[in-house]
View 1 (cartoon, helix red, strand yellow):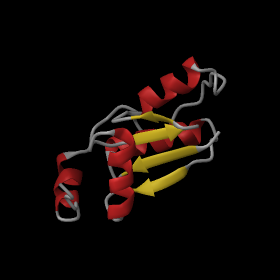
View 2: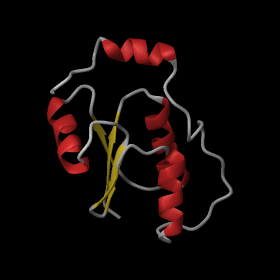
View 3: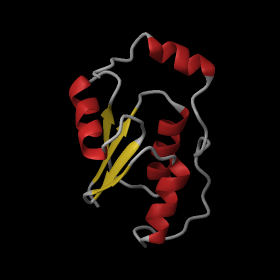
View 4: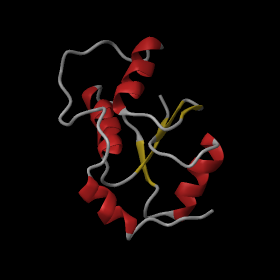
Length: 111
């Protein structure tokens, strides 16, 4: 599988997506949309919207998804076998207010 994950360095949703890839031991490209404006622009162009996380799996874009939604996609399309192991972090949880505040000073707006 070719997986590109457009993620924030620290964010509840992004950490949940990473946790699913780790749960299923999947290799993926972790693309930082906060510190790299070109990566953010690529995500917006490919997904057609500015929200993250976005995950591209074998050319299929899953836009603005949680780890739970990514896991459901993988299982529904039989890309992984079901697993009883538990992710190391919540897979469907937003960023905390503190995380949002810390990211505001780093976030670059391109529109």
